[in-house]
Image (cartoon, rainbow, N blue to C red; front, side, top):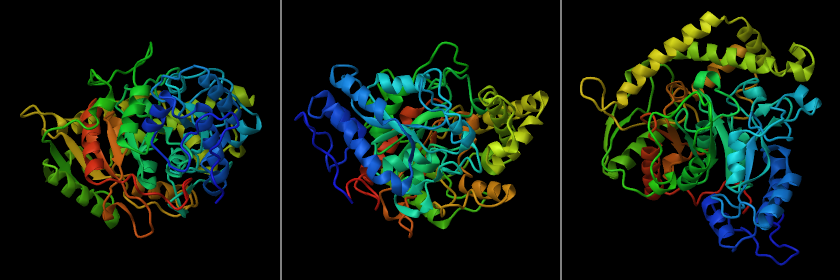
Length: 509
């Protein structure tokens, strides 16, 4: 593999060189003028040019604008930001930056070179913190395509797992996770409507925090999937996940939701390393309605032992509301109706209604089904999902007689280890739905309830599969309690470190 480009013609300090650091450390070096913004961006571009042909993580490059922003920052702009000089990638899915491509993985929008007309709150906050996007990361077509859990579009082809390129990165934030895991960028924007931060975080050995509903504004949009979606990040370390939350959290005028619990008085980064106290943690390494891969079960059991050794009260327990997946009937109905409404908003770009040849086969099936869902059906599903949420969150309620009083739930993140490329996109619609259900039995519940959940790697032997693929575990907290998640995730990171692991496809190899 060719060496990294680390020098600069101007003689300025270089950035990371051959030693990769997390975003927190890199930003600190830039603020201290020990690293140069222009150099950090040039090195990220070099790494992308070097590694992207192998893993296909970045599908739209924005190298030109990244270089312009780096030069402006070197001259004083956003140099003191929390992410000063840190190269990132923005997901190629509804993360608008004025003037940049808005293809959403769809070949018709790409043919028309559709562009965003405004910048959204999430992209603006990344930029205001000093982060510089070098490109758009791969995600499913229009958020669904053949499968919302796979970054394998007909337009761009599959994104491959840096740990084993025969296997998928999963999704939907698959390109983001691959870019971070391979060392192209130290942190990347992601979003989650049914596990799409946590799924690829687990599959790529990263930290993936899904924040509480309302913690991060979706402006200019109101909500996605009936309030089930949220933006966030995939990161190398727990402190980077906390830093991203500090950067992105906060309301915008007109937001439809506010979090159930306020943000801490200090920044979320201050929670990392704080003693969480002795917590009551329920553990379920299996679930009744779907088989769980034994390696995923073993990872959750190993994490339970780790937490027990850290002094927490760990017991076998699972919310009663998770005994079935009946809620998915209503959530899928909301997803389909929402996706159809979103796609119709692009008809002004196409200049005509969508047709079967404009999108991937399963996307077309879901588009047609979504068009047949009535307003009354949507409202009925919303109400049933609200009732499901009330039942689910009672498990975390500390009030005697009204709740079980648990602080955290621990589960496997995934029901399967990352499968081979093609597993989630090759087959008929019914087959693909069943396969996705096997991957995600522990995840969409918390999009419906709006609870914060985090996937963390496991720095023990149980944290890797025989194929050399990472296996993550999920922690879920009460609504609004990202602070508890970050404290415990940081405990696990310190007790069983994972940061020394590098995949075979990596910038430092």
